[in-house]
Image (cartoon, rainbow, N blue to C red; front, top):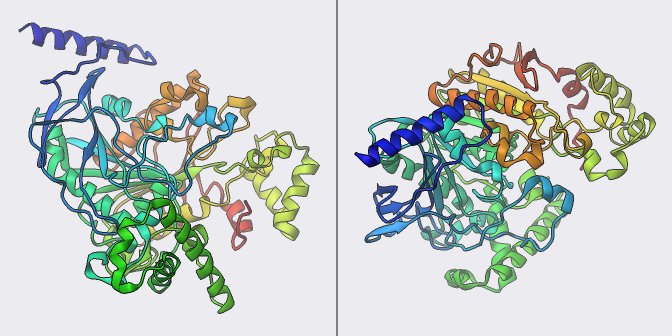
Length: 546
């Protein structure tokens, strides 16, 4: 009885603090041998309870040999302690130094690396209570070569779980050469090697399907969402028959919509890696014992050689090869390019929220001389990119954003992600039955005198309701908390019902190419139709410079 009364008091305090608009909730942490124990198909796991939310970290969802498909994890006896993040995928380049200013904003947590990195984390308001809560399955960014579920403080799932009575799941999986080296020519055991990274994601979604009901979740209401590389992974999963039915809604935040690598190229890269390592095809299995750093070095050389070969042959070097490792059109996991109507048909009934930030990879941050640029200096910089289109581009930017006052604003409009976001929204809304909702995050961060604007990753603390964890990025002011309340509620509502609308926002219409209704997330959210149409019309066909 005492334990029940204590729980009631704690929840009453939580409700009161939430209702009063407090920035944070602080209650005694609860952990111990018999606290927060949940059952999975592989065995029991023990987490902890923080501010009324059950947290589990580092749970194995699968296991895999190098370059082979993931398998179910080996069952364990007893109760597995699962209170700290598990290992992350090794990176191509270990972090040995950082930029002081940007690191102040991001506060990366690089974690510890191990190839045995197939782990996931769960935040839930309750376990074994019979409820079927929406599941929000977060996929981290970092392109296809870096990142982890703990990399940024904005990824933490406690706040959104509490606010929305939802479950947040995040995952680690194989990246870079470990996730994408195509050895399919050298044995059935390597059949899926070109997309092993995505087979891991499917295995994690299968874990959710098999286990999430024990954590208070509904396996039939799963929303996959991710940012940057994570957004690209969401789109890729939408294009795969192997992932069909494992999720029911999708959110793409600043993802990339581009063609998959041709498997003839990926196989050529695989052969080049073996050649660099001095491994003959009949002894391909010895690659499992090659040290990771040696494997990476061979991979880098192989990628460069294949680029040079294609150039010498007069063949195009596709986006996948230009950027390094990524998904392959292998005919099995990915039988179609993502713009193919057959690929679009696979997710025709999956509602989608899609968008990006106004500034993304800010030119004036990468080119500090432009931070305090004069209008003449800004125009001179744009002239190098746009040539005889410069005046038209300037006119389009000023028309689209008439309230921008700094010259640097003219050079800082995103031209990398936005065209792909619009193209995907157009294709999805034209080739499916499920609704599409478009957004553009234009809120300008006040940190460093406003220099970081709506930077890449800036919307994540708002989506996750994590302003308190990310005050260095957002400034932590009242406006940030107010927008986070609106934006996170939209994501929660979408995960619950497939419709992001709520009373805190103006009506958010469904997107169509003809109208282009777009929610502009700023201090005063508003809907504009085709807000950046003029900018995109000028920039169409001109690749962005970095």
